[in-house]
Amino acid sequence: MKKSLLATALFLATTAPAWAHEHGHDHSQGHAAHVHGQATLLLVVDKGLVQATLESPLDNLLGFEHAPRTDKERQAVRQMAKALQTPDTLLSFDPQAGCKLERTQLNSAVLPASLLQGNQAAPAAGAADAGHGDLEVEASYQCQNPPRTIDVRLFKHFKGLQRLNVEIVSEKEQAARQLNPAQPRIKLD
Amino acid sequence: MNALFGLALKSAWNRRLTLGLTLLSIALAVTLLLGVERTRVAARASFSQSVSGADLVLGARTSPVQLMLYSVFRMGGATNNIGWDSYQAVIRHPAVAWSIPIALGDSHRGFPVIGTDAAYFEHFRHGRGRSLSFAQGRPFDGLFEAVLGAEVARRLGYRLDQAITLSHGSGELKQSEHGDKPFTVVGILAPTGTPVDHSVHVSLEAIEAIHLDWQGGAPMPGVQISPEQVRKFDLSPKTITAALIGLKQRTAVFKVQRHINSYPKEPLLAVLPGVALDELWRVVAMVEQALLGISVLVVAVGLAGLVAVILASLNERRRELAVLRSVGAGPRHILALLALEGASITLAGLGLGLLLLNLAAWLAGPTLEARLGLTLALQEVSPAELKLLGAVFLTGVLASLLPAALAYRQALTDGLTPRL
Image (tube, rainbow over all chains, first blue to last red; front, side, top):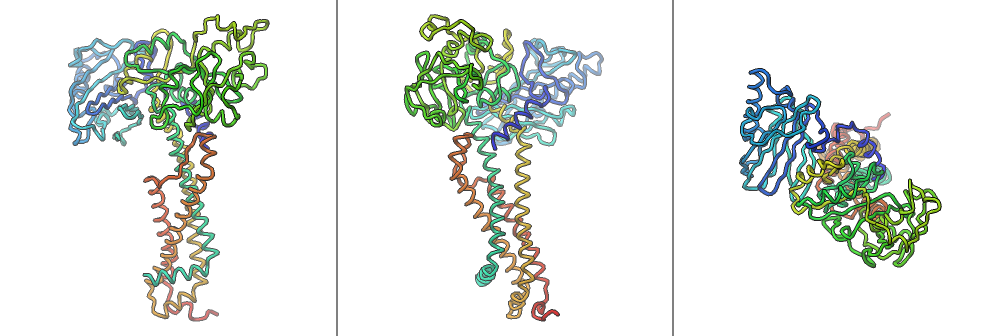
């Protein structure tokens, strides 16, 4: 039975739309997948230290994907940057974990660094292909205890985000989860 | 209550044939339900146990699931190989602790041949972090030496020092035998319950050596390089199919993945095995749901049969129930009597179903483990199974309340007054 199950899986997996599997996190070359409405979150849970990397098409967060041209657009970028740097916008942890946001960093090839406050790094190269723009958010948290649950709060703040592919790595396990506005919780063992 | 139970038992004994068959149908339905659940769990476990030690799987750029399937589980074929130079370059990353190269493509009597190196026997982990152990012999050392997986040795009846020849490709074509360069079996691995059991292991150099006088997938006419001459050639590998990579610190995996995926000279793909498997399960989930749905329906059929049998028995028991009523049993007692019967049969069905399942696992387990690497151990009931069993029991009890309620409403005199 396993064989036939797997044959079906193999068939389905290989006939799935090409973009469904193309999330090689590739920046220096090639073209990373860019699907509006979806984003990727990489989570490293190393005991009390949680590092999160969010990669999202700008459209999900801003509604446009070019350098801001009007004051209104500039204001939108500032607002987004400010929101993403507020501790509870990205992730929230179970209270027993006692997690504190230590550092956030925003990178985007198409947005001026001056608008993304607290951004020291140079814009990532190659992100602005084919008229699309992405944003990378890196956040690290320090927790007193290893967190048990993580809620992704992005869905509340950014209505353009419909699906989040999460990859979780800890000393014990690797796992993938798919979150959406109705199911924003990650349970860790 | 005790008296009631005795009555129910005696009454049931009178109808033992119909009730027995109903019991059997419920038991079989439960066996199917739990069997589907247990196979699902076992399939997942056997997959994740096959790569328990590796943090990354490296291969040519393709779909992560596909890379996992062909490199670790030998299902489907590789689309591309990767260059040995690229492999050497990316594993030089300081976070990499060890790596196992894997070259696929040849076979021996239907079993895949894996070109690899000594790291395989040292670093490969299966199950909960167990390393490979030798049932007999030792790792390969010389050029034409092979190490067999447990199942290969068992099914082909091979022993140490046996000479074997490899075939090019999947081995269906007669002329594609590497007959001129036989290998000697120097080791046989202990069973692991993973694809390792079904593999023949040789060194990467040996893979190069047997293809020296080949070109374009066929022996070059007129060119014959004997096993003795072969050693004079440069046998360092040119390409490999995939590699398993272990890190010093498992949490550095995204960094190394990014490093590999952005390797400029060749499009490479590094996959987190746990993540790729979860992706695979998401795809398989549909099929699993369908199987589970079917077995739930079978259970429903079984329980419907139970209700039908009890309902049908109401008529033949009109006298019996009326007599009970006339000697002082209240309608509540009748209700309890019938509900008790339904509940007991459901419970007995659950027990018998579990028994049958374990019997099946005991009988078919060794075959399944050998053929599919599926471990269906005799095990305690898992929480998920307990939930399923509880749901079946509850449904059974609720369903048997229907005939009980009907009997409850029957008048005292019903069954005593002869119908004309």
